[in-house]
Length: 116
Image 1: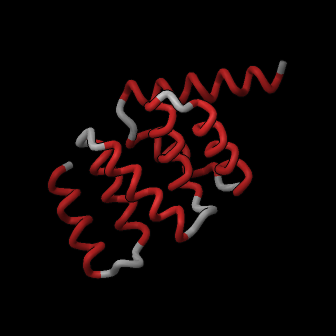
Image 2: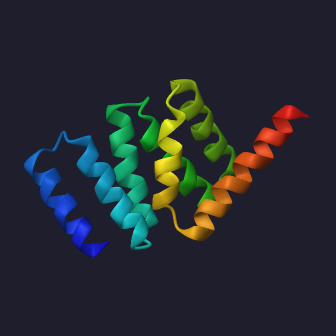
Image 3: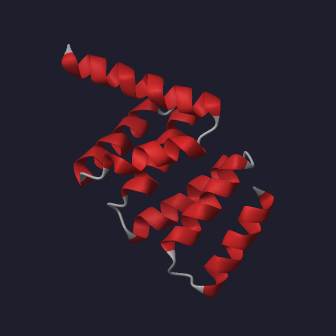
């Protein structure tokens, strides 16, 4: 993760508008347990493109990790409204095991609540 972070930072320096490099940088920060920095980077990316589903999904996880269930739900609802939920499965591969379980459990509970 540190090497990926350094590479992503260089890519961001080369092209400050490159959203993919910012997401890669945020993923590396997340892997290095620097969630607050990842959150700031993703928030900046979201301010530039408020309907970007991969950014919204990553932010949702970070909010759920902090215990901000309402905010996490709001972000997940925005992902669903974009119509681009295909980003969720690849993102789950990035998440750490405990975070993947947190997201899966949360989504499952929300789906059950909706069905009831």
